[in-house]
Image (cartoon, rainbow, N blue to C red; front, side, top):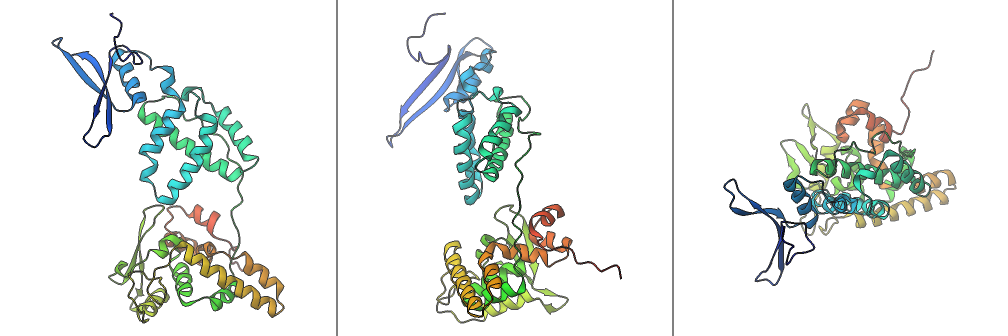
Length: 353
């Protein structure tokens, strides 16, 4: 075969096409210099990603893909480009953080050289400082690997399968009535609304903050959870009787605001709360409640109030309902998740006598 006169950085019969667009952006794509059934020359598109193009070239040439195309760096790049943007904003941020840590170890490693032993070593070394984060990173590596199998980078079984995770201790703080009442009494009106809606719907804080008047339809408030995309209709009336949730929404709708807001949780001037303004209000109410408890000489209550976080309201709702009801309200498909993570009080039972 005659040596290439150009594109010498590419394998035999691979071509590079470069165009400068009107916008000034340079367009580059790769092609296979092949033949059709009649023997006529034809250029087969290989795509704009050089690494993927080399793998497609290897298929057309009936060769093994070049070793460098199987580096985890390219798998991570594709996952970051194609998969992460499809996730919720908070999940995207978390995934990018996990990916940055995984890259430090696996970026220059060939995908077929990774074994369960290497994953376990990563767990142990990373887990010595951040055991929970190590679990999240390993879980992401597992999904990256599954996608790599779909994309054809490997046919090997997922090396994360069967590797033990670091032991995690779920948060077990329970906001009892004394703690709840102390903070609720010190809260501004929009924080009281947020606390009530969070407790009565059992939803995540982000899902509560986005609730709008338009979500109230046919005697229920409709919720689509950010994390799972699951849809729920939470009733405002049951057998013709207004639920406590319905009463809270009536209270919010009946309140005069200087500017009407589309969102249920908003300031008296109509400005919707976000996670940061909600946190500022909650922290202030909690501090005021701590001061009141100390003033009354109840240091034990002050300590419990200090441990209270807004995210503890969802588990409080789960802990005060029958398990099946709690699972449905929280949007869980399995009772085990509700039981293990969200229920923070023991089951109420009768004594022997």
